[in-house]
Picture 1 (cartoon, helix red, strand yellow):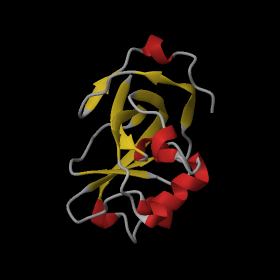
Picture 2 (picture 1 turned 120 degrees about the vertical axis):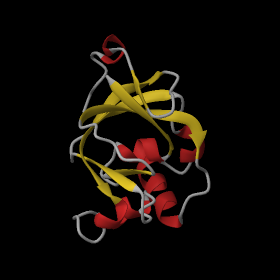
Picture 3 (picture 1 turned 180 degrees about the vertical axis):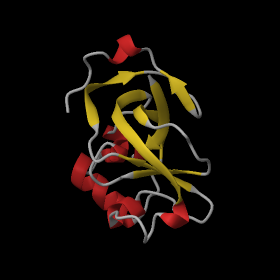
Length: 144
């Protein structure tokens, strides 16, 4: 199955109600299920809003507690739009906007409302861009 690496806390936030779009400088034609991988890098300097979301959802020690270098769950990509066409055109949330970089020329990969989180993170080395994860590695790992 295809996977994509994101820095924390954005990998975990994409597997939450707060982040509907993953923003990148490149578009994707990929639609359907994609595994979310948390890279080993964590963004510790985040906006006050993102810090509030992380503290509320993951606890005050989110900077040290969030898993890294692991497969976390699955989203279903349903669209890819230019960032300037997402706000205010597409329905979304202030939380989503705070969790992305919606600058002119970037792209927002919209996920379906539903997402699935693995029962436990699965240690796995990520890569840049999309990469493949063996199906047998994630079989039976999904809980929600």
